[in-house]
Image (tube, rainbow, N blue to C red):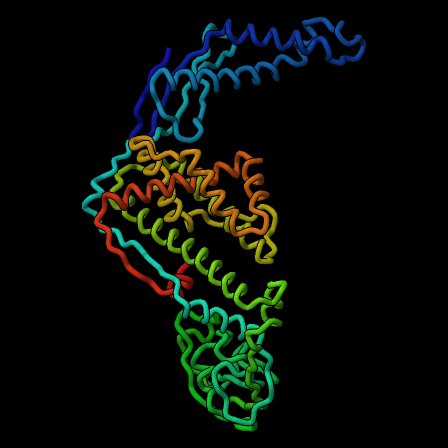
Length: 434
């Protein structure tokens, strides 16, 4: 027998009882199996009296059997009461005497919410579009040339993209601040290593010159002592070197991996890679825009247990990312989960909304869609067939692709109903925002 109480919101309490004969039979059976192999001083294996086995192993076996029966009984009672349980229940044994005719217990838990997806047709959806141009390809070639530039001494005034060697000293209220001074410091202007105002002050100077200027640091600057404050810098320029870019020729193509040095092949590879990356980013941007629409029209209460679990996942992911960047993370280190609450809430909501849409409108990933997406990925590798086999060899990898296809299906479903406005973007804008 079982009964269900609503404790408020999504929280429920299930009250259930387990017949003692059911437990006693399992306990006795397990003890007998133990008796065949148990090693007890003074007895040969298999010859230990049952009473001794019961005395030595009885309490442990009783707890194991009770725990397993609680789990099984709860699952059956939840199914019988048509409860969609979110997370893990908290059990409380109500019966004090575990030898009583029935063991009564309660399980407290949350259920999945009812998800209501409102009218998508009334929502505005911005859809990003992009067309790769010849200029995009040429600009990328120029960027690759700049990355391989050779710097040569110049007698002219400093220009952007020059490499300069300087001494500098920055003072706040007449005192040099921490990190505000350096000797024989080399920097390539325009590379973003220093603040724009600092670099702009160097442009136009000639070797041997010195100058002083005031500069205000951004309010969000990482150096808290000078953030948002005005300082005075003095710069002495020692040398100027101008970049000499390599020619786009056979040697340049070979240096970038084109074995035969064919420049036309190099440009085709650049075009293909740009196209793939740009379309990937377009897809990501449009997916993000679609998910925002779904968050606006989706109405549901978020189970606390799912929110806490997702916040934990985000915290662990953040710690792994920090380790991947070379930071030493102390064993067992935790971050406050409240920092991740907003992101966790958004992710849990989206997960529940997507599940509802997929079930209601049959948006599951079809096998031919999964196969097509894997083959699309594989084309960017030298041996596509190996990539296809790699995905096929692991169910978890296939599941990742299925999830991506499912999201694509949802994006297409929303786009077919919402008020869509196309917005063309340029390559630079597309690349910098992802």
